[in-house]
Structure formats: C-alpha cells, structure tokens
Image 1 (cartoon, rainbow, N blue to C red):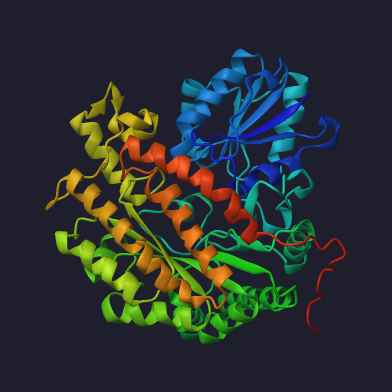
Image 2: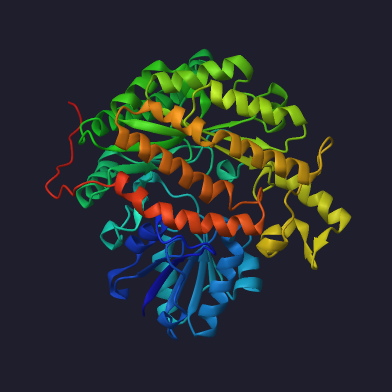
Length: 504
C-alpha cells in the first residue's frame, strides 16, 4: 500500500527556504511494511496526479492558509481511488471541513507521531475510523525526522524541533491552545543526533523550529520561588538546565554551523541565556514584537513585551549578544493610527534588527481574536461569493478581502498600502546595504542582500498586503534568486562528524 505525504502549496518556487519538518517526521512514523513513503513538498514542485493509484494512502498536512489547496489535492487523490487522511493544525480544529471540502477518508487530530501508524494499519484492513485523536504526546515519544529521504539540494536550511508548547497566551496565536502551554522538551541526545545527521549531509543552517526557544524565563523562576512552590521551581529549573546543556553541546559542533529559532522578548533580560545562545551560534531569532506602543501590546495580550525606547534597548541587547533579530510586526490593531507605520519603520531601523516582517492583523482559527470576530461575522451574515467571511480560507485567494477586522480610524486599503510602504522602506537597497555591515566579507554582504531580496519577494509581495500582479512577479523573482542563495546556506558534507557528548 504506497503512502504519499503532501505539503500543499499553490506557490511553487523550485527551492525551499525551510524544510517542512512534519513530512519527514511522519515518514519516520510510517511502519516499514508500507514501504518508503513518497514525500511531496509543493513549495518545490506541484504534486503529479499520475503518481496516485487506487488503494494508495495520501496524507495531507494543512494549516489555515494552505487548507484550500490541501482540499483540492485531497479531492484529486480521492477521485483516483486513494484513501485521503488529513492532519495538521487546521484539520485538528475543523475535522468536519476536511470531509465536506476535501473528500477526507479520515482525519488525525493533534500530534500524529504515534497515531499515524494506527491509521495506516486500519486503511490497509479497510477499517479506517473517521477521527484519530493523537492528543499531546510526551517529548520522549516525538519521532526524529527521516532525513535520508530529504533532497538536500532543494532547501536552504533544515529544521529540528527541540520543544513543543508555549506558556504565553497571545490573542493572535493558536499555538498555546493547540500545542499546550506546558513545554514538552526533547532530550539533547535526540536533538544532537538529528543535527549531526543534517550537517553530515551538508546543511549548516538549521532552524530550531520551536514554539518558544525560551520556555522558562527568569521571571517564571522568581514567581515560583516567591510562592515557595518547591515542586514547580524544581520542574522549571530542570527545563532551564536542559536548555543550557543543549546549547553547550551545540557549541561543540563545527564552527560553520548557524542556528535560528523563535523566542520571546523576555530573553533580553537574561544575559546568561543570551550568552549561551551566542556560544551555541544561535545567530538569528524571530522575535514577536507585534506593536511599538503599549496600547497595541495590551490589545494582543502581549503586555509582557516592551514598547518605545525600552523596546529599542531590548532589541539591541539581542544584537549585542550576536543574536540577529527577525522582528515580526502586526498592523491593523485597533490602537494603530496613520503615524504608527512610520514610527514602526523608524524603530525597526533604530533598533538595528536585520530582518523584519510586517503583517496585517488576521484572525486565525484557534485564537482569542478569532472567537469574538467569528461571532460578529455570524451575526452580520457577511460573505464572499456565498462563503461566510469567517471561513475566509475557503475563499479563492484572488477574491479574499485584504483585511478582515474593521478598523476605527483607517480603511482596509489604507492599512494595506501603508503596510506595503513599510516593507518597501525597510528593504530598500541603501538600508539593506547598511545593515549588511554586520558581516565582514564582501561575499557575505552580497549574500545578505540577496537573502533580504528573497525574503521580501516571498513574504512581502505574495501575501494579503499586495495585489495579484505584484504577487506573480514576486514568485518569478523568488525563483531566480533562490538558487544562488541556497549555495550560501550549504557547505561541504561531513559524513564522519560525531555527536558531541554532554559536559560531565
């Protein structure tokens, strides 16, 4: 019974920036008796329908923004006689939608590492259940990815997960609801095995694809100590100690390796942690800044962040510790005003961050923002071509509204245009050249410029903040730029590399 794993995408760039890790985790979770799974990432190339035969199993992982393409793939596979099994965050939130829109044979909710094998066994027997609940498994049960199936010449960087779950509760994020607020942290042994395998293959840039690389803050420890909660303090201290052990072992890997991750702003108040990141060559981190004003941060339940001058200082703290920042900003918050855009652009420049993304506020399923918005849309009956607006992911991309939440001071077009202007200002060539001074070699500076250009084309010019004509041109630009960029990220394979041991 052939098994196909598909990461749906309606934009194929030929080269991928980051490996979609879930494909290779489920490949590892596929029992040997089903053979070697076919792995298809449509970021690289579209799925060939002729590769699907009657009786095959097609596993499709969907998040909200690729759900429409995922359902299209599912219907095609079902028409060719395959068993179609959906998983991923969106399928976990809306399992019935996969049946109604995507011709699902079954849906896996939650973590698929263990339950995927059961679904395949049932498909082979012809006894598929409608729903399989994978729940939230312990970190000891996480499957390492099957990297022997990875086409190493098609991606810039690989990805390894060290922890699932985030203790925060930001209003625009679903992670803390889907993956939980309790950090589920893998052992450093299992992480290092994967990292070393990838470096043996020639990957030197690796994304530590965590919900939050800083799962225990200094403030968490102080609160537990203040409450005299010995059990909680021991638990948190253990998690923190394991983080330091991981970073110590990463520091012993070849010096050409670079790690990237996602982290909260609070790490700026923890110099010991930042120094450990520096030694481990965790050289880049996506930091969710969201808003430059206190009012904006309160609007998204992120008042643990800083604003204004204090924000600049904290961002500079990352940079001073050689952790380059990809700052993530949200526009369209109810507290935003026309001057917010210029203020955000100026702060991003002043703080010395290397990359930035500027997104418009979108209510995603599973978030606090979505709950209230969904109810109001239901009451209004708003729709596009008969599709309720609170199911915007089912609307064809060229028909979707540019913004979903009404704003008290600006029109959707104004927010969209001003957002695009900030992208343009941040990534104009003189500004990028100035920022490239963080490197010392001309080759690296040119690479920095190419990567900045690629990032802007793939994310600024293909999203809701732009128009379809610009998006088409951006995809073509991205294809041209991606191939030379990939050479910067890879290195000579090191097949003899050993796994560094923990410090005694």
